[in-house]
Structures are given as C-alpha cells and as structure tokens.
Length: 264
Image (cartoon, rainbow, N blue to C red; front, side, top):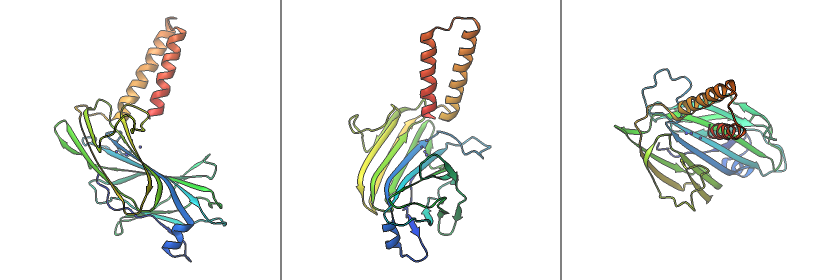
C-alpha cells in the first residue's frame, strides 16, 4: 500500500448528468478510505533505470449508494501530478460481491490534474462500491542514507473512517514518524507499519505526517522479499533431497512463506 509525499488538495466528484455536485455527494457517500504510503517498496513496472528512491501510494475507497435506485456514473479524483516523476501504476474497481476486480480504463486530464473513470457495474441501492488507485513518485528527500518523507492528506469529502498506513522498507533503521504513535494507538499488524485511524473526517480537514529513517540498502523491499522467498524454496528442495526435513521444519517454512505472501 504507496506499499509509498506531499499531496495537494484532493477532490472527489460523483458526476451524473442531471444532478448537481451537492446532490451527487448525497447519492454516493464515502464510508472508508485507506491510504497506504510505501517508501522504497517497489519500482514502477515500466522503470528501466533503478537509480532513484521510489515511493508508492495506494488509495482504497469504499462508497455506498444511499438511494433506492441503481447508480452508475463517472468518478473524478485530482492527484498530485506535479510531483517529480508522478505516474499511475494501477486503477481498478470491484464487483458488488467483491469476487472480481476490473482494471479500469481511466482518463488523465493534465490540465485539471485529475484521473477519472466510469464505474464498471451499476451500484445497487445500499450496495457498496470499492476502488483502488496506485501511483508512484520520487517525493522522498535523500541525504546520503537519511530519507525524509513529508505527507499531507487533505480530506476531499466527509468520510466516516480514514486509515493512513505507513510501511517502512526492510532494513530501515532509526525510524521516526510524527505524530508520534503509542503501541496502544498504532493499529498496524506488523512491526514495520504505522497506522493512524481517524473517524468522522470533515471535508477540508488536513492530516500532516513526517517520516524519517536511515537505509543504506538500495534494493526495494519487494526485491528483498522475492530473494528471501527463493532462498527458502531452495533450502526446502535441498532438505527434501537428503531426507532430513522434519515436520516442525515444514510447518515453520510454511508459516514463514505465508507471512511473506501476506506482506507482499
């Protein structure tokens, strides 16, 4: 998720031909928005030169149709397209039962700085609509091994729940993040995640974060994880070949592989 910038003001518009913006916002309300900020997690799929510090940010949104009629329409979201080397990575939405993901044909408006698309399916009354956007930039400031990321989220609508998740890269040291999170208030599932939960966020409300860490490793987290997975598989094959692979080892390797896949 990101996994990671100073985000400009973001606006979400649900546009139907016969409705005003205020009316459209009452048609589809944004229940939840999860923002995953992932510095040095992976490079953009089209990157050939890997001599920069990448940042991946992912949005996962959940809306609900508040009307008694099916709705289908156009969603438009401004993104920080003026950030250095800003690029879209992936845009999709999901079927009503969440069993299918549809990669979306989206439109970029460089003048307005927005991405827009049409929902893949009708959204039934009281049903939820979920989407995901992933984009990349080079917004991390680098001073030798010291990396600094400033991130600002300005709410584009009234949102019931906003979850901002920072995932620090493998082999990062001396990690500092503000606002400071206590263990009680950190909702991250892993040691290298920092999760902030905000309820009833109003349109225009801002949340500011600063993340600093030291890291001499040049490979992104995804490459390190792939190497670790390959190493585990190779060790498993070698042990099976000599007949010295115990039941406890099988369970341990299986659990580790599961955790690695979960992190990916």
